[in-house]
Length: 598
Image (cartoon, rainbow, N blue to C red; front, top):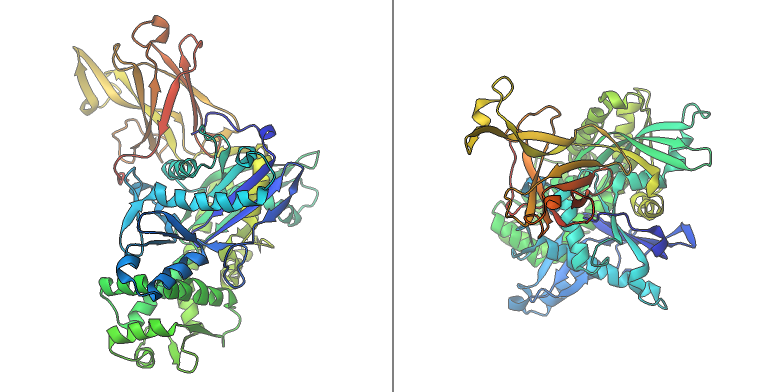
C-alpha cells in the first residue's frame, strides 16, 4: 500500500484496466489530450457485438505458463481437446469468471486459491497476475517508439467500491507480480467503479436537475456489473471554473446481484431440465465442453438477456445449444433433448429440433430475472432509506447489466412513482472504463468519502471497576489491566476529507524488540468498547522495523500516520523525534480465512 499519491507530472499516458467478472476492457489517454479516451478494441478474437471487451477467461498450460486470454483461451482449450490428447489437456488450467473469488472478505486469506475447470487450484494472486501481465503486454504494444514506456504510464485498475482492503491488496500484489508498476507500486492505482462512472457521466447527472440554477446534484449511482452491484450516494457540485467536485453522502453498499446472477439461475434451470443432478457429471460436462458451455451461458443467453423487452409479452428466445454438448447431455440423461424439454414443467420451454435450440418463453425470462432485479431494487431502497440520502432525486444506472431493458424498466417503475428521476448512462458498458482514465487525472474531484466501518487498534488501560468489564482484565506484573480496549482511528459513517489523516503513537511490546507490531481491528458498529465484542474482528497489521528501538530514548515511541481518505489505506511511521522515517509493512490479508461473528 503506497504511502504517497503518484505524481501526475511523471506520466505521459494513463491506462485503465476494467477487470470485470464477465468481460475485461482497456482504455487509455495521453497527457497532451487527456479528454480523448480511446478504448482498446483489437482483441485477437471477440464476441459478437461486444468487441470492446474480452471475456474474462484465462488459459494456462500444465506448467502454469500463460497460453491465452479471452475468446482465444476458449478456442485454444477446445482445439487441444479436438486433437485427442485428453491426458495432456486435462492438465491445462482454464479459469472463468474468477474475479468473484475476491468478493467475500470472509473467504480471503493468503492461502486463497481459485479452481480451474479441471478441478485443480492455483493461488489467486498467480491467476490475477497472469491475466494482468497479458493485459499489460498488449497495451505496451501500442506504445512503440517510447523508451521504457512502462515507466511513463500510470496504470488504473477498477475495483468495486464494496471490495474489502484484503481484496484490494491481493489485486495490488498481482499487479506488482505482473510488473505493472514500479517496485514501490506507486504508478498503479485503484479507481472505485461507481466514482469512475460518476466522473464520466457528470453531464448526464447535471442535465436532469429539477432546478437548473442549482449548482448541486445529489444522486444514487448504481453500477450493475457482471458479478456485483455497487451502489454509491454522491453529491456532485459544479464549481465557478466549471470543474466539478464529488462528495460521498453515505458508505457504498451492494452485493453479488450482478448480471451473472441471472445467468446462474439459467444454469440451474438447465441442469434441472437435463435431469442431471450428480455434481461430478456436471463438472465433467462443463470441463469437457468448456467452450460450448461458456458460449451457451455467456453468449447465447447473454444476447437474449439484452433483447428481453418487458413490454413485448409475446417474445420468445431461441438459445442455440452446440450439437456435441446436446449429445453429451442426452447420453447421460438417456433421453432426447425434445423429450427432456417436453417433460420439464418448472419453466415454460420448448425444443426446436430444426434449430437445435431451446426456446425460452416470456414468462420464463421474467422468472429468471425477477429474483435478481428484486434484490437490486431492495438494495436501492435500503440506500435511499438512510437519512443522509433524503435529498436524492436521481438514480443513474451504469455497468453492463444496465443495458438490460427489463432491469431499467423495473427500477424505473419502482422509483418514478416516488418522484425519482431514473436514467441510465448513454454508454453503460463503458462508463466505468472511460471514467477510470478520467479519474486518474482528476483524483482531486473526490473531496470526501464516508467510512463503511470503524477502524482502530487494541490498547491497554488500568482497570477501573466502574467502567471496565471484569472479564476483560489481566494481571500484568501485579497491575490489573484491561488490554482489549478498542481505540478507534476512525468511525463508521464518518466523513473523511481527501488527504486527511489520523495520528497515533505506539511503542514495542518489549524494550528489546527491534520491531513494533500494531494489530488493526474493524467493526461495523460505532460504539463497541472491546476488541472481543461481537462483530469486531482483526482487520490486519502494521509491522514497523527499527533496529534502534532498544538503544535510544528517542526511538522508544513510534508515530504512525494513517490516511483512510483514498481508494487504499496509506501509512507513514517515524521516530518520536521525527528525525527518521521508518520502514513498515501493511498487511490486510490474513493467513487463514475467517468468518467474523455478527
